[in-house]
Length: 262
Image 1: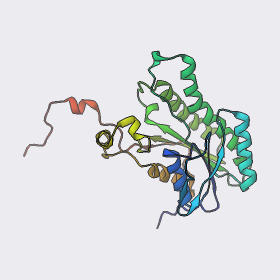
Image 2: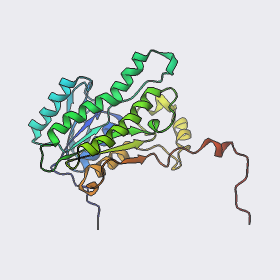
Image 3: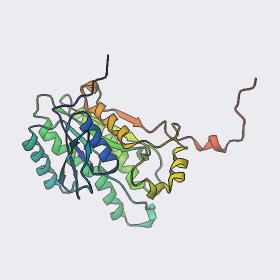
Image 4: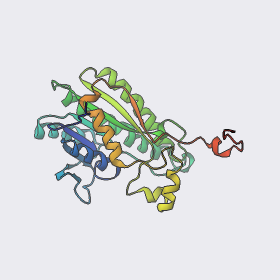
């Protein structure tokens, strides 16, 4: 039996869907047949397309509750429904905790935790009145599961986002499913800023058990699965998409030979 992930007739919103991981997610939904709406503060340099289909763009600042409310009501009015929200927008500059003010760290928490909450609440108002409900997918990070030096506020926000999703899954059941994708490192057009040239990216990828960084479309394919009927009994889950995680440092530091003797 084939795994049919056809989302034809469904409507999906991807926040921050104009580049990087978000654009990869949007393309996966387009390939699955969904109508896709992407939002960000600024339009993409080029339209987000896949298989001859194009995602529709709307400018919105997710930190403005009134604008977010209007945006989701507009999506429902334009398309007649809203089946999936992928809360992808977020990020953080590198800042040590004592290198800036609490107010600046709070802005990171606002973008990565409060803004997704605002979007999810607005989406829920549409989904709860639909006969077949809907699905919310939070884009989390391994930074929320382990120490995150240099991006501590981001890691704390992502940890909170995962917990928030689990609470939403209980409160909004059975009509709306809520899950989290916990991402590791993903190769995007911004990877060079974090890891350097191709040699640097390859070296970083070698620290992952699967030997490479994820591709944005691989994250998108996982989102499509969670949004599909095949994941109809999956809610309140945290799906790790991190290539096996991080190789423990002690394994590289140890000098003991663990090879099997003949």
